[in-house]
Amino acid sequence: MMKFRLPHVFHCLTIGLTLTAGLLAAGCGSNEVIAGPDVNRATLLIDNRTATAMGYRLDWESQIVISDGFRLLEMDVFDDIVVAREGGTILTVLEARDGNTRWTEVLGDPLQTYVGTARVDNRLLVSSSTGLFHFDVETGQLLDKHRLATVVNTRPVVINDLAVYGSANGHVLAHNWRTGFKQWAYDTNASIDTQPVLVGRDLVIVNEGGGVLVLDETGHAIGRRTLFGTLSNRPITTDDTVFLASKDQSIWALSRRGCRARWRYRTESPLTDQPILIGDVLYQYVPGEGVVALNQIDGSVVWRCPDAKGRVLTQHGDRILTWFPNSVYEIDIATGRLVATHAMPRLLDIQADRLLNGTIYAATSTGRLSKLVPSN
Image 1: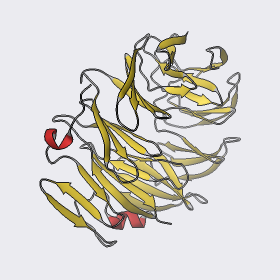
Image 2: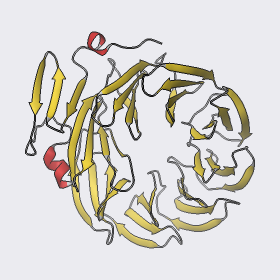
Image 3: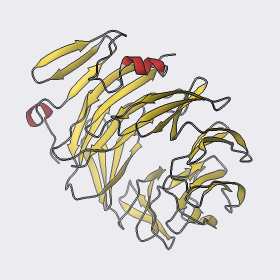
Image 4: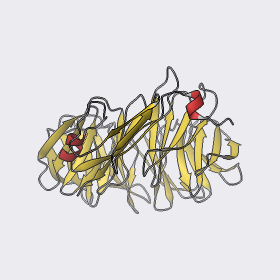
Protein backbone atom coordinates (compact mmCIF):
# COMPACT_ATOMS: atom_id res chain seq x y z
CA MET A 1 0.00 0.00 0.00
CA MET A 2 1.66 3.22 -1.19
CA LYS A 3 1.58 6.42 0.82
CA PHE A 4 1.26 9.74 -1.04
CA ARG A 5 3.72 12.48 -0.30
CA LEU A 6 1.30 15.23 -1.16
CA PRO A 7 3.60 18.17 -2.08
CA HIS A 8 5.36 15.97 -4.69
CA VAL A 9 2.33 14.29 -6.24
CA PHE A 10 -0.49 16.81 -6.10
CA HIS A 11 1.05 20.25 -6.56
CA CYS A 12 -1.01 23.14 -5.22
CA LEU A 13 -3.97 20.95 -4.17
CA THR A 14 -3.68 20.73 -0.38
CA ILE A 15 -4.84 23.75 1.59
CA GLY A 16 -5.04 24.00 5.35
CA LEU A 17 -7.00 26.95 6.63
CA THR A 18 -7.42 27.76 10.31
CA LEU A 19 -9.37 30.63 11.77
CA THR A 20 -8.26 30.62 15.38
CA ALA A 21 -5.95 33.56 14.70
CA GLY A 22 -6.90 33.86 11.04
CA LEU A 23 -7.24 31.77 7.88
CA LEU A 24 -3.93 30.62 6.42
CA ALA A 25 -4.16 29.43 2.82
CA ALA A 26 -1.15 27.45 1.65
CA GLY A 27 -0.65 26.74 -2.05
CA CYS A 28 1.28 27.45 -5.25
CA GLY A 29 4.26 28.92 -3.44
CA SER A 30 2.55 31.83 -1.67
CA ASN A 31 0.69 32.31 1.59
CA GLU A 32 -2.23 34.61 2.30
CA VAL A 33 -3.66 35.36 5.74
CA ILE A 34 -7.39 35.98 5.87
CA ALA A 35 -8.37 37.29 9.29
CA GLY A 36 -11.08 39.10 11.21
CA PRO A 37 -14.81 38.65 11.75
CA ASP A 38 -15.79 40.97 8.89
CA VAL A 39 -14.12 38.99 6.13
CA ASN A 40 -16.61 38.07 3.42
CA ARG A 41 -14.50 36.61 0.64
CA ALA A 42 -16.23 34.93 -2.29
CA THR A 43 -13.44 32.34 -2.17
CA LEU A 44 -14.72 30.98 1.15
CA LEU A 45 -17.14 28.10 0.89
CA ILE A 46 -19.36 29.57 3.61
CA ASP A 47 -18.61 33.20 4.33
CA ASN A 48 -18.49 34.68 7.83
CA ARG A 49 -21.70 36.68 7.44
CA THR A 50 -23.70 33.57 6.57
CA ALA A 51 -22.10 31.59 9.40
CA THR A 52 -22.85 34.38 11.89
CA ALA A 53 -26.47 34.60 10.76
CA MET A 54 -26.81 30.87 11.51
CA GLY A 55 -25.31 31.32 14.99
CA TYR A 56 -21.98 29.79 13.95
CA ARG A 57 -18.44 30.89 13.19
CA LEU A 58 -16.08 29.57 10.55
CA ASP A 59 -13.33 27.54 12.20
CA TRP A 60 -11.37 26.26 9.20
CA GLU A 61 -11.56 25.46 5.53
CA SER A 62 -9.54 22.70 3.89
CA GLN A 63 -9.07 20.87 0.59
CA ILE A 64 -8.76 17.12 0.25
CA VAL A 65 -6.92 15.38 -2.56
CA ILE A 66 -9.11 14.75 -5.61
CA SER A 67 -7.59 12.91 -8.57
CA ASP A 68 -8.29 14.11 -12.09
CA GLY A 69 -11.75 13.27 -13.39
CA PHE A 70 -13.17 12.28 -10.00
CA ARG A 71 -15.22 13.94 -7.27
CA LEU A 72 -15.89 13.61 -3.56
CA LEU A 73 -18.20 10.67 -2.86
CA GLU A 74 -18.60 10.52 0.91
CA MET A 75 -17.64 12.19 4.16
CA ASP A 76 -17.74 10.64 7.63
CA VAL A 77 -17.41 12.77 10.77
CA PHE A 78 -15.94 11.39 14.00
CA ASP A 79 -14.95 13.17 17.22
CA ASP A 80 -11.33 13.80 16.26
CA ILE A 81 -11.19 13.17 12.50
CA VAL A 82 -13.07 13.72 9.26
CA VAL A 83 -12.79 10.91 6.70
CA ALA A 84 -13.35 11.78 3.04
CA ARG A 85 -13.23 9.50 0.00
CA GLU A 86 -13.26 10.48 -3.65
CA GLY A 87 -14.19 8.36 -6.66
CA GLY A 88 -10.62 7.45 -7.51
CA THR A 89 -10.37 5.59 -4.17
CA ILE A 90 -8.14 8.16 -2.48
CA LEU A 91 -8.98 8.21 1.22
CA THR A 92 -8.11 11.36 3.19
CA VAL A 93 -8.21 11.68 6.98
CA LEU A 94 -8.28 15.26 8.30
CA GLU A 95 -7.74 16.55 11.82
CA ALA A 96 -11.14 17.75 13.05
CA ARG A 97 -9.52 20.44 15.22
CA ASP A 98 -7.71 22.32 12.43
CA GLY A 99 -8.44 20.74 9.03
CA ASN A 100 -4.87 19.59 8.42
CA THR A 101 -4.32 16.28 6.65
CA ARG A 102 -3.44 13.50 9.08
CA TRP A 103 -2.82 10.91 6.33
CA THR A 104 -3.88 9.91 2.84
CA GLU A 105 -4.08 6.45 1.27
CA VAL A 106 -4.83 4.92 -2.12
CA LEU A 107 -7.32 2.13 -1.47
CA GLY A 108 -6.89 0.27 -4.75
CA ASP A 109 -8.64 -0.25 -8.08
CA PRO A 110 -11.00 2.67 -8.93
CA LEU A 111 -13.40 0.10 -10.40
CA GLN A 112 -13.83 -1.46 -6.98
CA THR A 113 -16.97 -0.47 -5.09
CA TYR A 114 -16.41 0.93 -1.60
CA VAL A 115 -19.39 0.87 0.72
CA GLY A 116 -18.29 2.84 3.78
CA THR A 117 -16.17 3.24 6.89
CA ALA A 118 -16.55 2.49 10.59
CA ARG A 119 -14.45 3.45 13.60
CA VAL A 120 -13.39 1.00 16.33
CA ASP A 121 -11.04 2.58 18.86
CA ASN A 122 -7.73 3.20 17.03
CA ARG A 123 -8.85 1.37 13.87
CA LEU A 124 -10.57 2.76 10.82
CA LEU A 125 -12.44 -0.08 9.09
CA VAL A 126 -12.83 0.64 5.38
CA SER A 127 -15.14 -1.73 3.50
CA SER A 128 -15.32 -2.52 -0.17
CA SER A 129 -17.98 -4.80 -1.61
CA THR A 130 -15.60 -7.75 -1.23
CA GLY A 131 -13.07 -6.84 1.46
CA LEU A 132 -12.36 -5.11 4.76
CA PHE A 133 -9.24 -3.00 5.37
CA HIS A 134 -7.97 -2.03 8.83
CA PHE A 135 -6.03 1.23 9.07
CA ASP A 136 -4.36 2.75 12.11
CA VAL A 137 -6.31 5.96 12.78
CA GLU A 138 -3.19 7.88 13.82
CA THR A 139 -0.73 6.87 11.10
CA GLY A 140 -2.70 5.36 8.21
CA GLN A 141 -0.69 2.14 8.46
CA LEU A 142 -2.50 -0.87 6.99
CA LEU A 143 -2.95 -3.21 9.96
CA ASP A 144 -4.96 -6.00 8.38
CA LYS A 145 -7.20 -6.90 5.44
CA HIS A 146 -9.88 -9.55 5.06
CA ARG A 147 -11.90 -10.99 2.23
CA LEU A 148 -15.63 -10.99 2.93
CA ALA A 149 -17.66 -14.18 2.54
CA THR A 150 -20.15 -12.56 0.16
CA VAL A 151 -20.47 -9.39 -1.92
CA VAL A 152 -21.94 -6.66 0.29
CA ASN A 153 -24.03 -3.60 -0.59
CA THR A 154 -24.05 -1.54 2.59
CA ARG A 155 -21.66 0.13 4.99
CA PRO A 156 -21.26 -1.95 8.14
CA VAL A 157 -22.64 -1.43 11.59
CA VAL A 158 -20.21 -2.61 14.29
CA ILE A 159 -21.37 -4.46 17.38
CA ASN A 160 -18.60 -5.86 19.58
CA ASP A 161 -16.35 -7.98 17.30
CA LEU A 162 -18.82 -8.04 14.42
CA ALA A 163 -19.10 -5.84 11.34
CA VAL A 164 -22.60 -6.49 10.00
CA TYR A 165 -23.49 -5.85 6.33
CA GLY A 166 -26.40 -6.22 3.95
CA SER A 167 -25.75 -7.96 0.64
CA ALA A 168 -27.19 -8.23 -2.87
CA ASN A 169 -28.06 -11.91 -2.37
CA GLY A 170 -30.26 -11.01 0.59
CA HIS A 171 -27.87 -12.24 3.26
CA VAL A 172 -27.12 -10.38 6.44
CA LEU A 173 -23.39 -11.00 6.88
CA ALA A 174 -21.84 -10.83 10.35
CA HIS A 175 -18.08 -10.67 9.74
CA ASN A 176 -15.76 -11.00 12.72
CA TRP A 177 -13.39 -8.11 12.12
CA ARG A 178 -10.88 -9.47 14.64
CA THR A 179 -10.51 -13.00 13.22
CA GLY A 180 -11.33 -12.21 9.58
CA PHE A 181 -13.99 -14.92 9.25
CA LYS A 182 -17.75 -15.05 8.86
CA GLN A 183 -19.42 -15.36 12.27
CA TRP A 184 -22.91 -15.98 10.92
CA ALA A 185 -25.28 -15.11 8.07
CA TYR A 186 -29.05 -14.80 7.78
CA ASP A 187 -31.02 -15.02 4.52
CA THR A 188 -33.80 -12.43 4.07
CA ASN A 189 -34.76 -13.52 0.49
CA ALA A 190 -34.30 -10.05 -1.07
CA SER A 191 -31.41 -7.69 -1.73
CA ILE A 192 -30.42 -5.45 1.20
CA ASP A 193 -29.42 -1.92 0.19
CA THR A 194 -30.19 -0.18 3.50
CA GLN A 195 -27.48 -0.06 6.16
CA PRO A 196 -28.28 -2.26 9.19
CA VAL A 197 -28.74 -0.24 12.38
CA LEU A 198 -28.65 -1.04 16.08
CA VAL A 199 -31.61 -0.98 18.43
CA GLY A 200 -30.23 -1.66 21.87
CA ARG A 201 -27.95 -4.66 21.19
CA ASP A 202 -30.08 -5.96 18.34
CA LEU A 203 -29.92 -5.32 14.60
CA VAL A 204 -32.62 -3.87 12.32
CA ILE A 205 -32.53 -5.01 8.70
CA VAL A 206 -34.74 -3.75 5.86
CA ASN A 207 -34.58 -5.45 2.45
CA GLU A 208 -35.79 -4.43 -1.00
CA GLY A 209 -38.93 -6.50 -0.60
CA GLY A 210 -40.07 -4.24 2.24
CA GLY A 211 -39.18 -6.87 4.81
CA VAL A 212 -38.22 -5.57 8.26
CA LEU A 213 -36.25 -7.96 10.41
CA VAL A 214 -34.84 -7.62 13.91
CA LEU A 215 -31.97 -9.98 14.75
CA ASP A 216 -30.12 -10.39 18.01
CA GLU A 217 -26.33 -10.26 17.89
CA THR A 218 -26.13 -14.04 17.45
CA GLY A 219 -28.22 -13.93 14.26
CA HIS A 220 -31.57 -15.13 15.64
CA ALA A 221 -34.76 -13.37 14.54
CA ILE A 222 -36.79 -11.70 17.29
CA GLY A 223 -39.07 -9.56 15.14
CA ARG A 224 -40.40 -9.52 11.60
CA ARG A 225 -42.79 -7.43 9.50
CA THR A 226 -43.41 -6.59 5.84
CA LEU A 227 -44.03 -3.00 4.73
CA PHE A 228 -45.70 -2.01 1.46
CA GLY A 229 -42.53 -0.34 0.21
CA THR A 230 -38.80 -0.24 0.85
CA LEU A 231 -36.49 2.45 2.27
CA SER A 232 -34.07 4.84 0.60
CA ASN A 233 -32.84 6.06 4.01
CA ARG A 234 -31.98 4.22 7.22
CA PRO A 235 -34.15 3.34 10.23
CA ILE A 236 -33.97 5.41 13.41
CA THR A 237 -34.15 3.64 16.76
CA THR A 238 -34.53 4.05 20.50
CA ASP A 239 -33.90 1.22 22.95
CA ASP A 240 -37.27 -0.36 22.21
CA THR A 241 -38.70 1.29 19.07
CA VAL A 242 -37.82 1.33 15.37
CA PHE A 243 -38.90 4.30 13.21
CA LEU A 244 -39.04 3.90 9.43
CA ALA A 245 -39.84 6.49 6.75
CA SER A 246 -40.94 4.31 3.86
CA LYS A 247 -41.71 4.62 0.19
CA ASP A 248 -45.12 3.16 1.07
CA GLN A 249 -46.12 6.73 2.04
CA SER A 250 -45.90 6.08 5.76
CA ILE A 251 -43.81 6.72 8.81
CA TRP A 252 -43.91 3.62 11.00
CA ALA A 253 -43.09 3.15 14.68
CA LEU A 254 -42.51 -0.55 15.39
CA SER A 255 -41.67 -2.37 18.60
CA ARG A 256 -38.22 -3.92 18.74
CA ARG A 257 -39.54 -7.35 19.70
CA GLY A 258 -42.20 -8.63 17.35
CA CYS A 259 -42.17 -5.50 15.14
CA ARG A 260 -45.71 -4.62 16.22
CA ALA A 261 -47.00 -1.30 14.89
CA ARG A 262 -47.19 1.31 17.66
CA TRP A 263 -48.35 4.01 15.27
CA ARG A 264 -48.37 4.92 11.60
CA TYR A 265 -48.36 8.38 10.04
CA ARG A 266 -49.69 8.31 6.47
CA THR A 267 -48.52 10.78 3.83
CA GLU A 268 -49.49 11.67 0.27
CA SER A 269 -45.99 11.00 -1.08
CA PRO A 270 -43.32 8.29 -0.85
CA LEU A 271 -40.72 9.23 1.77
CA THR A 272 -37.06 9.27 0.81
CA ASP A 273 -35.34 11.79 3.11
CA GLN A 274 -33.72 10.70 6.34
CA PRO A 275 -35.83 10.96 9.52
CA ILE A 276 -34.12 12.31 12.65
CA LEU A 277 -35.09 11.84 16.30
CA ILE A 278 -34.18 14.55 18.84
CA GLY A 279 -35.58 14.00 22.31
CA ASP A 280 -39.24 13.04 21.98
CA VAL A 281 -39.70 14.55 18.52
CA LEU A 282 -39.25 12.77 15.20
CA TYR A 283 -38.55 15.11 12.28
CA GLN A 284 -39.29 14.14 8.67
CA TYR A 285 -39.43 16.04 5.40
CA VAL A 286 -42.67 15.11 3.64
CA PRO A 287 -43.13 16.39 0.06
CA GLY A 288 -46.29 18.49 -0.03
CA GLU A 289 -46.26 19.05 3.76
CA GLY A 290 -42.77 20.39 4.42
CA VAL A 291 -40.79 19.45 7.52
CA VAL A 292 -43.12 17.64 9.94
CA ALA A 293 -42.47 17.20 13.68
CA LEU A 294 -44.15 14.16 15.25
CA ASN A 295 -44.44 13.08 18.87
CA GLN A 296 -42.41 9.86 18.94
CA ILE A 297 -44.69 8.29 21.57
CA ASP A 298 -47.98 8.39 19.65
CA GLY A 299 -47.21 9.85 16.22
CA SER A 300 -49.31 12.98 16.75
CA VAL A 301 -48.31 16.10 14.81
CA VAL A 302 -46.42 18.69 16.88
CA TRP A 303 -46.19 21.10 13.95
CA ARG A 304 -45.66 21.35 10.21
CA CYS A 305 -43.36 23.82 8.46
CA PRO A 306 -44.53 23.93 4.82
CA ASP A 307 -41.84 26.44 3.82
CA ALA A 308 -38.84 24.25 4.76
CA LYS A 309 -37.36 21.10 3.26
CA GLY A 310 -34.72 18.50 3.90
CA ARG A 311 -33.18 16.41 6.65
CA VAL A 312 -32.43 17.81 10.08
CA LEU A 313 -28.76 18.53 10.76
CA THR A 314 -28.83 19.62 14.38
CA GLN A 315 -30.77 21.58 16.98
CA HIS A 316 -29.00 24.83 17.76
CA GLY A 317 -30.55 26.72 20.67
CA ASP A 318 -34.26 27.16 19.96
CA ARG A 319 -34.00 26.25 16.29
CA ILE A 320 -33.40 23.21 14.15
CA LEU A 321 -31.31 23.42 11.00
CA THR A 322 -32.29 21.36 7.96
CA TRP A 323 -30.37 20.75 4.74
CA PHE A 324 -31.91 20.41 1.30
CA PRO A 325 -29.65 20.72 -1.76
CA ASN A 326 -28.62 24.38 -2.14
CA SER A 327 -30.20 25.63 1.10
CA VAL A 328 -30.06 25.46 4.91
CA TYR A 329 -33.33 26.23 6.70
CA GLU A 330 -33.76 27.43 10.29
CA ILE A 331 -37.01 26.42 12.00
CA ASP A 332 -38.31 27.48 15.42
CA ILE A 333 -38.62 24.24 17.41
CA ALA A 334 -41.58 25.46 19.48
CA THR A 335 -43.84 26.70 16.68
CA GLY A 336 -42.49 25.25 13.43
CA ARG A 337 -42.13 28.75 11.98
CA LEU A 338 -39.48 29.21 9.30
CA VAL A 339 -36.97 31.69 10.73
CA ALA A 340 -34.42 31.96 7.92
CA THR A 341 -33.18 30.38 4.69
CA HIS A 342 -29.50 30.40 3.71
CA ALA A 343 -28.58 29.74 0.07
CA MET A 344 -25.54 27.45 -0.29
CA PRO A 345 -25.44 26.56 -3.98
CA ARG A 346 -21.92 25.11 -4.06
CA LEU A 347 -22.37 22.37 -1.47
CA LEU A 348 -22.54 18.65 -2.19
CA ASP A 349 -23.22 17.62 1.40
CA ILE A 350 -23.43 19.03 4.89
CA GLN A 351 -23.33 17.10 8.17
CA ALA A 352 -23.30 17.76 11.90
CA ASP A 353 -21.35 15.76 14.46
CA ARG A 354 -24.12 15.89 17.09
CA LEU A 355 -27.88 16.35 17.10
CA LEU A 356 -27.71 19.02 19.82
CA ASN A 357 -25.58 22.12 19.12
CA GLY A 358 -23.53 20.15 16.65
CA THR A 359 -20.45 21.28 14.77
CA ILE A 360 -21.23 21.49 11.06
CA TYR A 361 -19.05 20.19 8.23
CA ALA A 362 -19.84 21.25 4.66
CA ALA A 363 -18.28 19.84 1.47
CA THR A 364 -18.26 20.41 -2.28
CA SER A 365 -17.86 17.78 -4.98
CA THR A 366 -14.36 19.15 -5.64
CA GLY A 367 -13.23 18.36 -2.09
CA ARG A 368 -13.51 21.74 -0.34
CA LEU A 369 -14.45 21.24 3.31
CA SER A 370 -15.53 23.88 5.85
CA LYS A 371 -16.03 23.50 9.57
CA LEU A 372 -18.52 25.72 11.43
CA VAL A 373 -18.71 25.74 15.22
CA PRO A 374 -21.55 27.15 17.36
CA SER A 375 -20.80 30.73 18.38
CA ASN A 376 -23.15 30.76 21.38
